[in-house]
Length: 432
Ligand code: URA
Image 1 (cartoon, rainbow, N blue to C red):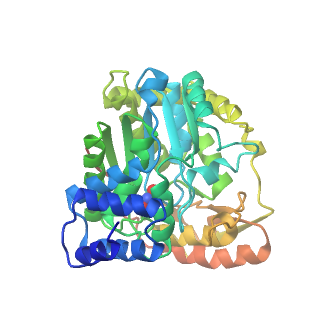
Image 2 (cartoon, rainbow, N blue to C red):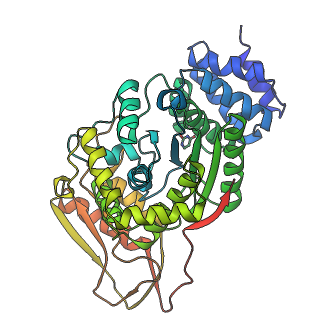
Image 3 (cartoon, rainbow, N blue to C red):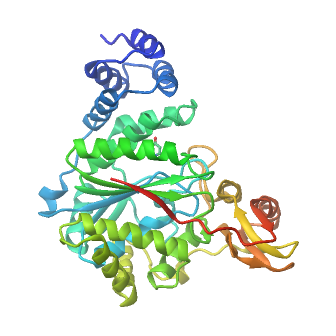
């Protein structure tokens, strides 16, 4: 018998709960014995009171235990790597990193999620590729990583089912914003999915869930500790999300930008993150190279076309048509132009994310269908000079009305000033 009300009260009053108590509560919730209203109250108490390290460990263990786990080493006979981002605007990094790392000879096996609020999800982006399937069985997933070295699929239903249920509850009860709940949610899924080495990308800034570098560092440290305890090597990049990553925001537009980047013609900030994440994944792999050598190999795989070749084979293996010409195209294209001369001072990621969401590229309610073709291309980014009448951004919309609505939001995202701002690095810090 789980005394849920008593556990809620004790957490509300700032007490530390025993591991067995947290396990009983979480597994009771997953089994349907603890109702949503009690779990929501408990999560709210955690948002205010936090969890100790021991409590966070116990909660994560219980989440992993709620489902089945994958043994990638056993299935592949070698070390596999994985990557995860906490969610940002224009973040298509995994779509470029996965084939790039595989082209360098390292197995990349990822189970991914869908978009959340104004942030896009890798699965939604991949589904903009005609024919691409994200619902492979566990056996098909493992077989593809074994043969091709790369697969990205949706989480199978039996992988951390407690998080699936808890995340949906947190999403609608104002209880997403807790470092410990986010860390347990992400790391339980990464641990269950079986990769031995993981690069995490914690986004920081107005377009991210973590608004400050201090919060992002706390989340990163917690996730690294959770990974280490489970015997995984984890490196966390803290990366800028004050502005969108790259230029393209919106599902098919982002896939196109990932392809362009694999051709060596991507935007500088996105290319930098793809290389930084790949270099660290290669350094953590069983290749026995350091980060500098990992970066050199990643650069070479772009330059010699092997990364693009692996991308095409990967997309075909999952049923998709890899040519960028096959990606859906929005019927209406509208430019947002500058009303004054100057330099772009800042470009608000959250505003661009919302504009793209309202164009139909994301979900406003669970179960909404998304429009893969629409989005925004930020032609100019912070630091770029612009003259009156020149384009700041290009909106790709389903109709004129949607384009006009987005134009206002996109314009408001741009701040133009007289002098070029100081450049901001893409990778702000690394936690390991
Ligand atoms: N991503 C997750 O998977 N879980 C969270 O709690 C937040 C972001």
